[in-house]
Length: 108
Image: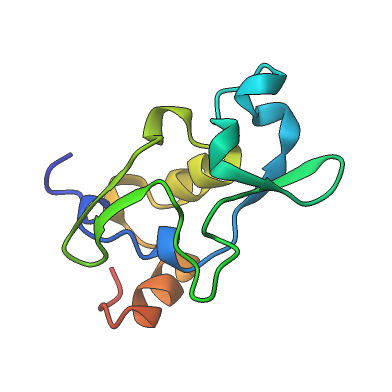
């Protein structure tokens, strides 16, 4: 895992809004800490910080493109899990490479 470019990158966490169903919240039986979200509708919440301009998830630690970590990796919501599944072992897809370009990083 230490050679995985995702462990240095973090561009996806600092490029996109992350909206998901409130059923994933800890208070609703899920695993995502409520304090890291903002409500959108009666069913949707957004990861705090991803609604900023520029976006940056409040759970992201470190410096994009150098070394990053997710403070809630084990408890991250489904959109984050799905994004990670599309880029196994640090092999970027189109969305990954768009995020990397926003931060001046080369495509994977």
